[in-house]
Length: 254
Image (cartoon, rainbow, N blue to C red; front, side):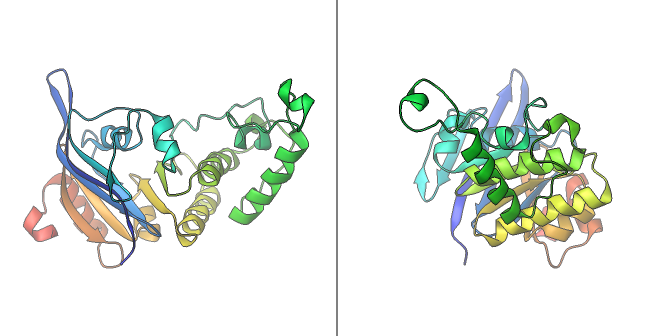
């Protein structure tokens, strides 16, 4: 059995009178891709924000690596080895891929120059080339501004940045949205490499064929609660849609 990394139980989150999470539970294991799916308004985004430190649940329990934790900020989550790839990518379009990889974690030159704040761009470029190569990320140019690259390449850099700095778990929120077929396949290949390296990957996606292509497990959220769990190897799109819409009862989905 794989190591249980993240165990969320009975999370509740209110926005005024709106109850976005109504006792939601979720689990993620090392060395697996677990997909989190649900219709619009199911609570997926709220749950991911609570699990990555962006927001805090009003009640419930979070355990990471077997210890109860309070994820009061994304910085706290990062210290535990949790990184997130957001839909808007959060890349700096005027900077090159290496600079984006080290965004907020820039390397400085050794000695006095480093203490004066001079960046070691050559070292960052070398490390970036190595990391991109290991993840199978192919870029049109390592030196061009990332804004000039294709959508798939920008997405690959955003995914690689989270993967490089994560040590335990990566959340990927619609990582292939608006990508072409070839670009989508490259991002899915990166996800598989991350899984095979022993990290946990949480994939949030509306693309059911994509989910079935990479997910080892699938957890379904509906109306702020987990209503079903499936193995990725023996479930159909029809079953997933049925669980998301309520056409498939919780007993049928178990």
